[in-house]
Image 1 (cartoon, rainbow, N blue to C red):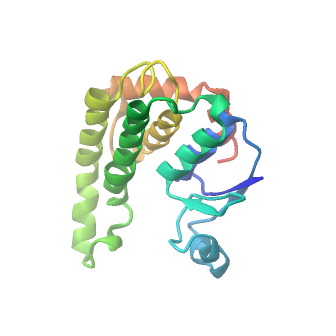
Image 2 (spheres, helix red, strand yellow):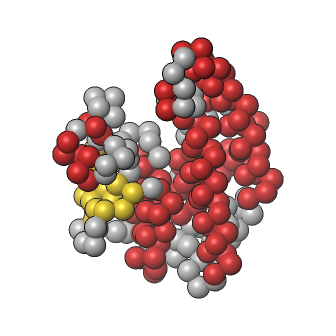
Image 3 (cartoon, rainbow, N blue to C red):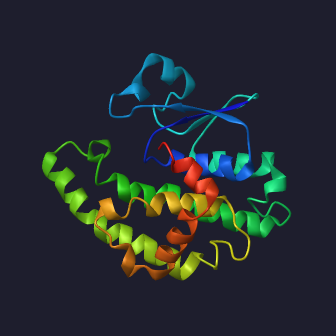
Length: 204
């Protein structure tokens, strides 16, 4: 059985939604980030990065949300969570998930984990003040350049939708009014109605 190491409100929520969408049997292990459990010796043996998510499979441990999402889609192809039979569309899915991981998530992290990039507290405040601007710019790019509709990739629901929903849950805390992003807001509302999302968030 798969085992997902997860924390409330983190990007690991996307992987949990995908597991629910896939109907995959899995065990959930909660990691208390506030208590520092991610830095415990036991957890560092699982993920030396000290972050979530981490997915334990029969073949080994996977980390990084884009990799885990693709693994779930490929392991449970009947769920049709990715365009597995079209190399170009599959690459577009990867491009979207990579953009969230490499740009959008980093924009968000600047507001909470400035110590990763700077030492002066004044720098932390400067980075935090920039977050509403950079997050809004990223979301607008998604609306204009990535989102096909009605789902991220078009007619087919994919793991990209689970990832976008997870990120859009952060917008209020990042000082972004989702009402200024009508496409993202509509997507977020429709995602919130999906049973798989409700199950994933029930105890998150």
